[in-house]
Length: 104
Image (cartoon, rainbow, N blue to C red):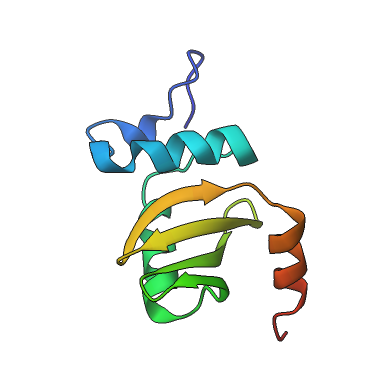
């Protein structure tokens, strides 16, 4: 699906809303991940359904979730505030420790 120019043809005719660009930039910077079409929606569903566990509650309106990208089988720490994905957090020692404390 990826052409010689590096463009993933699945993105043809699709776009990322401007309010989500910060998240996508941090995801690439911190995890080396570029999401395929539909993977962002999967992350949202995992958070909304409770499939993605809360690793750290930051306030009544803000929490860090551990979300798995199923295609890459990579886990990502995501900050959600007021129900909106804000950023992909770096995998700090504190977050990795909190992840290990989660029930299996």
